[in-house]
Image 1 (cartoon, rainbow, N blue to C red):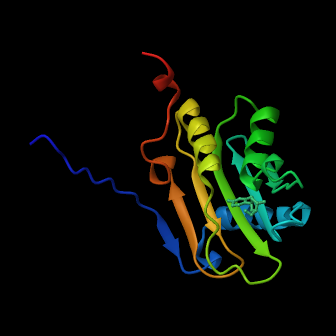
Image 2 (image 1 turned 90 degrees about the horizontal axis):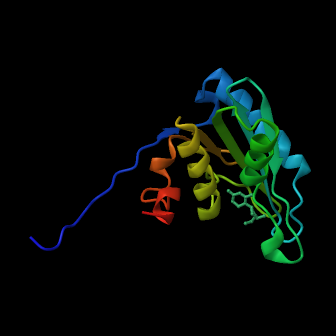
Image 3 (image 1 turned 120 degrees about the vertical axis):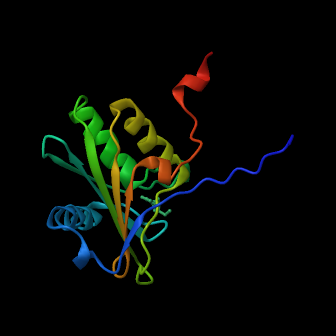
Length: 164
Ligand code: THU
């Protein structure tokens, strides 16, 4: 057959609420929630907090930082991950928790990273050779646990595709 239909599968865990997370994951999500306080999001009114847990036990937070020149801003998870990678360049990233609050409504679904953030997280994951866990939450409601970026960015662009 000259044409193949290929189906890829992603898996993740859905919790009814953050109460169902492990103590450790719930604690990390609290750090992400606190990080919302430092968000600078006057243009979207959508404030995001992220917390990265490293293998050495350190937790590095970040929040979205917008700018009047819109593309100059950066998402919370990239702020947190770049901060973690620059402060602890050789330490494995274990888990990233992300949550958000909106000015005009209650966020009742988990915040899911944009494509650019997925690409960034996926590259750190490949480099460290160990899966990164993601905990995604809204203000209320369900929480997703995603174990490994293959579940968020199948067919990612990889560094080895730059050469042959
Ligand atoms: N944002 C994040 O910080 N993380 C996400 O996962 C989704 C989007 C930010 C970017 C922008 O400042 C605002 O949310 C609205 O898109």
